[in-house]
Length: 119
Length: 169
Image (tube, rainbow over the protein chains, first blue to last red):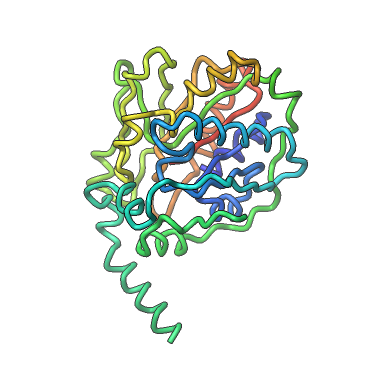
């Protein structure tokens, strides 16, 4: 989605990206990014928590109003209400996505190679 | 404090992201805000795989299942806030139950309407858009950059939209 932010901005729209992956936004080069530390699938926060959603939107509007240069990244102070391990499980699909199912052995080998390199 | 992009990722998916190479960008585009946000009309774009069940088919997850390195690059026009129950979700990379319970977590249309009513923003587009975030492996976003992104940009500009909030899933 960072490339869409760039494309819309290039076309003449002022954009702000609210993302769980500011790492990726920085790599791709996004005009304005608000990083949020939420599980995937929840850029505005928890379902049913309208106050939290409004706080995130409000910070995004502030960023839009105050950013002075392309590549500006702000970080939200909002926190996720549940323990990390449970949240990691909860956002993932019940069945692994087709690409993860297909590439799992390759990524496992990649992780093993990293561990070997580190020791 | 900086956000940890990998906090909620299992190691296998973190490895997926870290294995993707990105060509260094030459420059970052910039459109200055045209005025105070209370005078600006906003559009919304998400990549949560939302679609209007009354108007459009879901994203092509059947092809993705048979061709896992491919992701549907097309987009859908979303229904307005008075038809939120018509929104479907087709995304194989997420547990979509929270989105089905409260679509505002990816498509904050009701929150934005509240901001319009209270005068914090100038307006909200009648038509907003969704993509489906998985664009293959390795990711190929060329259709987004050359065809579908410019198409929604034109639609927004024709509708008088000045600012866009993007919410990847």
